[in-house]
Length: 249
Image: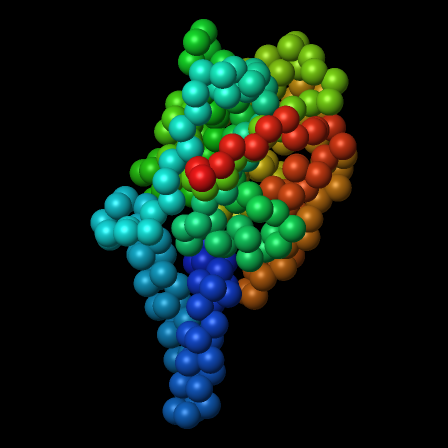
């Protein structure tokens, strides 16, 4: 069920960016009068094929002559990033297009929590299965987090408090290697998380509800309506302000 839900979202994302295929599917259905069950099975087959391409792309199995360059920060730029900051990023893969499909107010598709360890800057975040070969919450270097990314932004609490930031980071670190990616996008299950939920849960444990109890409604075919936290919901939080943006250009 979880895999089917994720496949449906990927299918909608793919059709959004490739409208010609949508018209082709409609024509095929009209021309050959495909039976509903066969049409449904065809859709599932297409979903699995799209996910196969997505996974192959994430593992670099296909050549990418137009791959976005990475963002490389110098020491002065990196010094602007503080412990507990939220770091948003924009990418152009199939998974990112899935996010833009359901969150048309956002220019970002992913978010993580910054952890400063000595002179190193790291990011605690979670990605879907097949992206980076890991389905659990993880901690990556800032350099790794910004690979093949066209745009990134740092957001910070308006009332900066090191104690709150440390408590949020401690909570986020407790999920590393334990909480899997949540393919059902269920906010009630802390054993499975997605990127915005991870950041929200971390700060909520420190006494700050970044969305103030207001959630987005996600309604997709064959899926029950569910409450969801979109990237734009976090970016527009009154608790946060944008510190700086970095671009690959």
